[in-house]
Length: 333
Image (tube, rainbow, N blue to C red):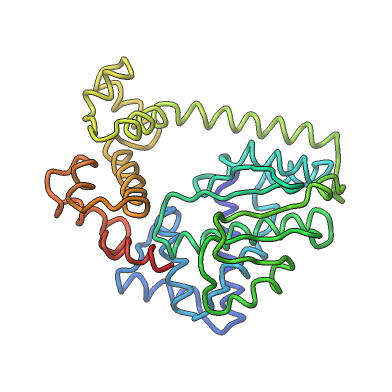
């Protein structure tokens, strides 16, 4: 998977889209960095989410991510994109998407559900503020719908998009832009596809090349799982620890390695115990703030902070808003 190609296409399409609307991406980024809203590291998932929020605020276009998603080139997904294009039908493409979604890099996770003659492709996002999550959902679903329409050379008949939040300003354009019905304030954010169209043939189907591209995807997936083995194990232990956030000595013992070996393995995976702790604390903090009535002091204690003030400072560093602001924004969306 060429992640650089995917990021470059994202920036290229974004630059073009903004220019059509009379805006300069470079100027918006420059101003946002000056204001402290983002940093120079735009390859970071966190900074990308912040940039998306800045762009919508700067342009005043709430449908910007919907429009952008329709422009991302499927070829920028590299081997994964070519594997999708060589699938026999929509059903095969959807199954491939679910199996190999992780090789495109960090981001939203998909779940598949079936009910009443429909297939629901549900989106799960655990990072970012509620506003950032909304924008990422719109970008992701727009891209998926656009890719589906590209693969079959027509609108996906009978498909509907459910979104779990209230319609933002300009939401009336969403259905027109996506060529599917859009329903807001739904229990889940998901793309609903009738089972009757899952057998529609993909225009670029090629059984011979599909075998090759799918094997390449398998190789990439196995490589990714090997590289993230220790990182994933540490994340799992931290998430499952409940109210007793363990230190590195305890985690190393649970993994049957020395603390020195664990640090070396994590460094080889371009991460560290501290970075993973921050990621997990961030994830759990967002869940506690949005799904419980726990106080800031209680959440801080669950996350291993000795003082609520330390938790507030860390959360503000992650999201540029306080935990209280994050909770209030979530409840009003």
